[in-house]
Every structure is written in C-alpha cells, then in structure tokens.
Image (cartoon, rainbow, N blue to C red; front, side, top):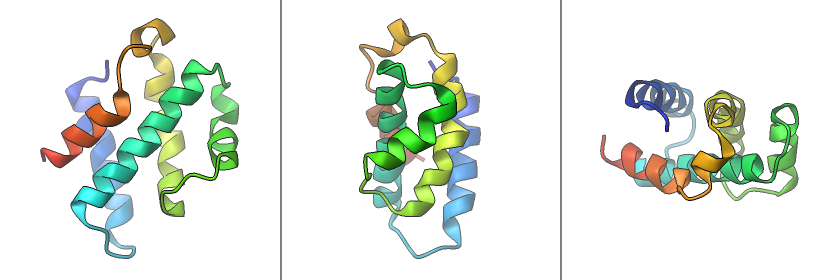
Length: 103
C-alpha cells in the first residue's frame, strides 16, 4: 500500500493547495480527499488508462469542489503504481480519510 511517508507528503501537498481557497472544515476536506482517492481506485479497477484518468473522473460529475480535481493527477501515479489485485479488497478512500482526520 502507500507508504506512510508518501501518504504524508501527498496530504501535505493537498492541504497546501486547498488552504488559501474558501474555508472548508478539516473533516469536509478529509472527506473530499477520500472521495478523490476512492474515485481513482475505482478507475484503476475499471482499467481506465492513467492518461485518461482526469477526464474519466470529470465525466462522472463528482460532488467535491473543483479544486480537488487537481489532486487526481498527483494521487493517480502512486495509486496506479499499485497492482490491481492488491487494491481490490481495500478501501483506499476510507483509509485516506481516516489518515487525514487523524492528523
């Protein structure tokens, strides 16, 4: 799975990118981040090519604020590096949200 260092680094990038925009509670921010991760995981399991990931997710009209779409390309690489068999039985979105909320 994602190493703790990689997870922390990516979370820091996301937090920095979202800090200056409209105010969103930490809980909501973590939920949105978890939704992005879950969408990437679902696309990976559906065999969507990484090069088409952002367009595929955008076509689903996600409920998170538009600024979270920037995280798709940042998070897509590490998630696509994982083998599909390793992420079939894991809920990466929930794990991400829980890790985010524990900080």
